[in-house]
Length: 270
Image (cartoon, rainbow, N blue to C red; front, top):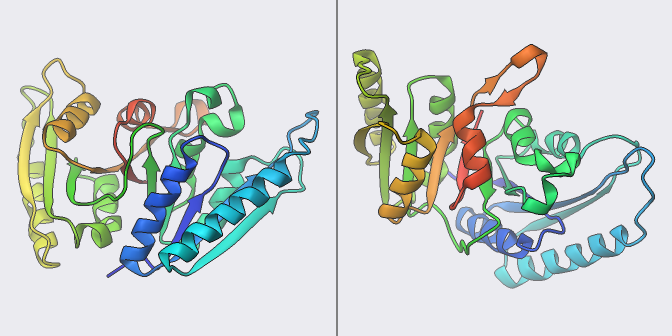
């Protein structure tokens, strides 16, 4: 069971090369088609950047060279979207629906003031309908999935994330299913379901170690990152739910914090 069709976003971020290398590594492991996508959008009342096409052509050349060197099947999508006001997220979501896995970069600090890019990971997680692997803009990540954390909270989002991650879990060396709850909270039904998902994964030949932690004064997001660092983990898998304040759709607070402060790749599913 492999990912067969992977999409990686190629942009002008300084760490895009590292993201591409990771995407190539995953595609090679899964014998997948890797599609690189670069998007040019046009904002209202903004002057046209004449260098955008040159940067996109250079990105294509680099993408094809690296894919050829790795010996993987590849495809390039250089999109110059003609409709003014369409966002990068809208375009990427449209191309994501027919893919198995989406790989994008964490929004860098310089992008936080740019509305088209500052919430790109969030918009793809909520809108693509596919698992989204977000790669931090700091650090080197040659591969993922050797030591994995499954962030588990019984419900639709976690169940979706675990199943979306199965192609990665099949090749993992160690998997820890981490259930985190506030002090004093007792939910025996969730404990039963937690054991159920581990038994279910065993039917795929995936062995999981269960751990239950309490939050205390430390946030769930910080517990996840501290646990990952202490145990040398290279991937977190978690479900992301959306909140609906006043008709809008925003990602939940744990996922939002991780998208801001992540130190290792995270596979999100919604």
